[in-house]
Every structure is written in structure tokens, then in C-alpha cells.
Length: 112
Length: 112
Figure 1 (cartoon, each protein chain N blue to C red):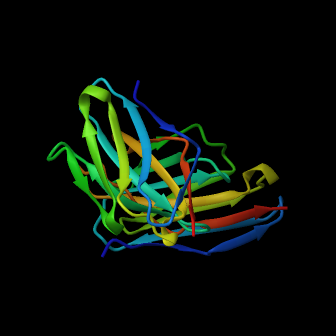
Figure 2: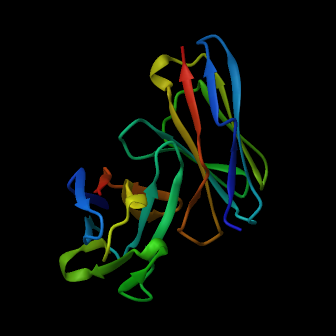
Figure 3: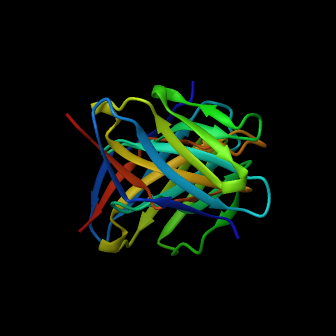
């Protein structure tokens, strides 16, 4: 069965510091992987997705993620945090047929 | 245009009321989804419609009744809800053969 684990329910960084949000997946087949961001009182916005075309995926707002099959990881990074990056981040894996499995989410706080 | 719209933004209803949530997309997507999201939790899949037919029902109580009148529109009819049904209800859509789901802003529901 496919599953997603996000390490750390809450991550706090200083403005300008590196952002690293961790996501590990378990899958018996090559997965489709996604990162979504949710700002307070809003829906989910797609940040980026991995669909086997390239292992390093660039997304919106300066975020990127690297697919590492050997580590079954898809960690999200941004070189320099901005106050506007404060939000909830969800990693998700697709089971196909419309079923997305979400991780528990990581709340990112950015300190001035 | 990757916009999914949802109305209303907020809804307060009593346990004996009947109300409906509406979702619309004009991206030509043939799959549409309803999710329920409680605070500080990931979205939980409720229903999937594919080509206007219900393809997945995740054992949702019958007080939630989905309807897909056409390929652009998805409704969720609510009747005799319980206070624990209070949540953010998210709609999403995806292209045929694509795993990427695009989410609307959600309807925040409060059941009194």
C-alpha cells in the first residue's frame, strides 16, 4: 500500500534561511508525487509535481524538490525563506484513479 | 486557467436544514472530487466523479449526497448534518489521464 510520511509537523526558520520540508513515500510502483501549499483559510495550491520526467522538479515561488528513489524521498526546499512562505505544506502520492494520499502536513513558520 | 470555484465561501446551518455546496470548473477536466478537511489535518477524499458518473464513494454517510449535473459542475447536497461535520469542504478537478488535481478555495461549513 502506498503511504506518505512528512517528518516534522512544525518547522520554524528565520527569514532568508534555507527551507527544508521532508517527505518520504512508500510505493510498490513508480509514484506520482506532489507538494501542495495551503495558506490560512484557503484551498490547496499545487507547488510542484514529480511525474518521472526529471528527478529535480522546480515549482512556483522558488520551491523545488528532488526525487530520490534510493531514499524513497521527495523533500521540498527553498534557498531563502520569505515571510509569505508561512503556510501548511502537504506532500501527496497518487494511487491512480483519482486517489491522492496526503501526508499529515507540515506547518512552516518564518521568523523575521 | 487553472481555476476551480466554490460557493458559498462560508455556510452556517442547523442540523435540520438542507443546503448545497457548488463547485465549478471550466478547464475541460473530466474528473471532479469532493474532500473534507478538518483543522490541522490533511484533506480526506469523499467522492470522485469521472465523466459525470460517480466512480468512488469513500463510505460517506448518506446525509452527504453528491451530484454532477454536467462536466463543469459538481454539487454536494447536505441534509441532517451533525456538528462533527463542520469542516472545510474542498472541490478539485483533474484532466483525463492526469493525476494532478487542482483545488478550489473551499467552503467552510459550520453545523450548529
